[in-house]
Image (cartoon, rainbow, N blue to C red; front, top):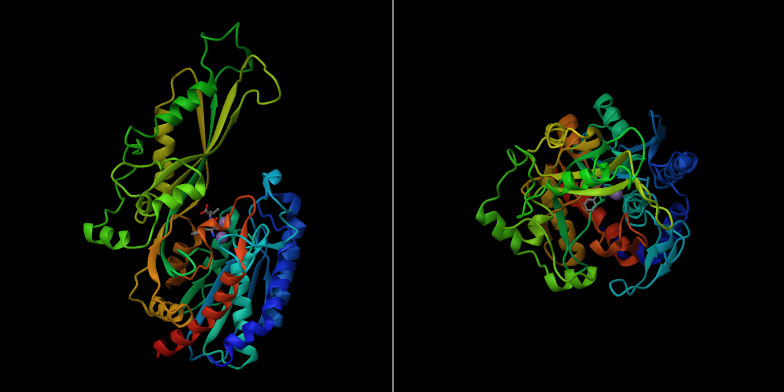
Length: 462
Ligand code: BES
Ligand code: MN
Ligand code: MN
């Protein structure tokens, strides 16, 4: 497109500063104390979309945080791209581990980002990546080069399961009608190894509660004679994997698709350096399901992980006590064809079955969603591939990710359209962790690559 790289060079500081303003608002969707900040962020996104040339921008009320919707329809006969992103962020804790406050963005250099990276919660996931689309639109509208229609739908509840967005999508088929959905909320392999995410894992998230005696007990007077819920819970959790790190829940693997040797060979071609992987995490060895490589373990295979576990006395010093209750939060990452609601039921039944009579068990399902895979022969994928060729000078590698964006499979089901995942983050950007950051190089590269997608998609769509 004309003047694209010039536009980016000239506006670089403005793009960075605008993102920094957005990152200052703590839009933590999970914590009701931040409700007003979440709303403020939605209003800021609305204003930015209007400035970028979007028409009829509105905040769509939901039972939770609002959805920002806007569109630029230039000709009903032209194809329409629906851009999805989220303006909410994960909680910032553990706050002590941040080297600068999570909502006071600063630019710092890192080994991978010598040009500087913006450090703040949401810098990469997903405010930074979402905002690339706003700036790409601004470029195309202000230079009269928008080649098709665009709709923006930016939600505020992705990090808490997108429950209200699901309802919104179901009720607004006509409004959201599109030819392809475009999302930047994933990553790429490396700055010199562009990749397009072709798969996302599904998710089933549950909370368990194990109850023993009706009150906390003296661990001397009662210890050995009654079930300790924490002992029992940890034993039950340990039994969920066998010695090969297979998950032991009956029927759990029934619908897991087995990739052919050929597909696995293709996957193994993606550049991956195990030694570097280990040293980046300061671990002596990796760990996972026998028979699969690290890349397979975190993309095409399902997993079960405890995300949190608590109970009993965790304060200073010692207290001799057998707690009445123990708790854990458990996530299962699922692969295509595993139905998350079915898996949730299988978990529940199994967990209740393995509990000894001495305790009672309660399983509470949280959110979940289906996995997703997208073919690489669609117009959308091909347009994205060409866009990366234009800006990276290399054909991107298709790669399945281990993360989840549950709403993507619902988009396909409700809107019958494919999603193209053009992510520009790096694994080392520490999303959901302390010191989350987004490289300025990646940010600008995204702004540069997105308009090329529009160009190719509109041209190929005819
Ligand atoms: N953007 C992430 C998902 C992601 C990150 C996918 C990197 C692929 C690569 C998203 O915001 C996220 O965190 N999703 C949650 C699920 C959600 C239901 C809370 C996840 O994957 O844990
Ligand atoms: Mn995200
Ligand atoms: Mn996230």
